[in-house]
Length: 301
Ligand code: 13P
Ligand code: SF4
Image (cartoon, rainbow, N blue to C red):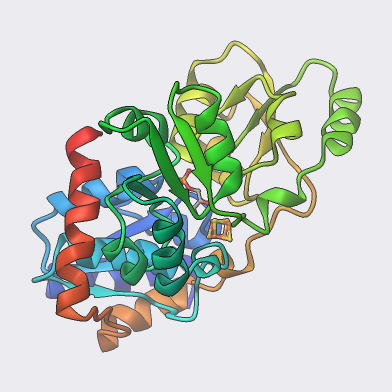
């Protein structure tokens, strides 16, 4: 099937199923091109909550599709490749979180959206990289537990008066960005600015011109006067930025592939709609608590 055949088939199936396709900014180009909505974790969860479609096909990783299901429990949420997980989300289990809470009684738990539904069910409020600071500041507490990303926690701690106690998780893709690589790239492209995701290590964040979620990067790229931009996040981001800003040049930082974000393909997306595979199911007791955690975040955002 050519990409044009795939696009036609997807359009037919979407009409048949009353389906919508939500796609994260890190997906491969052929999948980004099928999106009804392409965005960051916050934008995708807002879309999932707002859509009146019967079926959501989620092209991203598992926690994102789970979040969509939490917010739209009566809809069918499908993942074209259900093996697309997030290693960071697996770095804290509900049992570990219960122990962490017991060590710091009374401190509310802010769970990055990159967590399982079971962990969200044990947390007080969710956040994404786009709203983490606002969420932390909204809490009526001086000390906050932040899970699982220690680097995002470090970024938030720089901008709040609250004490942040962080879990030690990290994104294996973003921690591979090194300051020396950025120095080298700046030498190669002297006019370029450097933007980075807050999942990167603090010594990389320190040398960035802007620190933003992937949605924030879209805005930065549109508004900046810079003509060249080094993009410090998962490499799939550059496709969208280049499409939307053909007059600017974007540079991928080497070794920034998230293998899980590459598992979904256009062909798997067609199969997902044809066969209604693979539906997300969440234990109802877990879902009820986890939904409140996500909804509290949406009230702040
Ligand atoms: P955002 O798109 O929300 O910035 O998230 C980045 C990420 O790592 C998702 O897995
Ligand atoms: Fe998880 Fe990092 Fe991949 Fe995002 S880029 S899905 S945080 S491993």
